[in-house]
Length: 208
Image 1 (cartoon, rainbow, N blue to C red):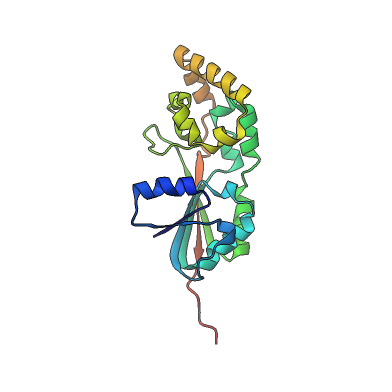
Image 2: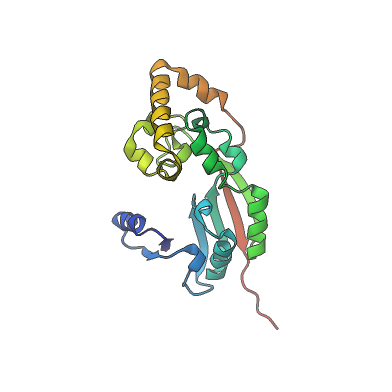
């Protein structure tokens, strides 16, 4: 396996978890890896950070020999169902604007050369181990922890100090009073919290 990330800090943390994987510091928009190298690829909650999504997907297609590209992302309509809007509306609006609809995303994958594109919604549960934006869906208290927020890009990059302070105060009050349970219930949706997108690159056929 090979892991690629633009952030050296994230790569340093990754190496502490597994030093048997080949870790490379590069932007997906400027991959130096040779073409037809990998039998698949995984991208987790990163596509909204790509400065050039089309170029990024083209590069992923290029370095794959064949197999599936599996992406975990969120659609704008899914983000609208996050109860975090109740506490951090400006932050959520900024994040919402960076997300692509499935139709746009599918078109970009097809433009890059991928086929057989499918989607499956993912629902956050209360025993989720990873800590990304909607991971506290049923555990609102985790957002009060600055260490948790420091690992969530929406809080570190999109939330201004004034909204963060007022939002956390309101959230803490609602947790203590139990009001948070009503708010969580009011945002329930069947759309899913995130989306698994699977796109296939067929085995290269010989040209006669």
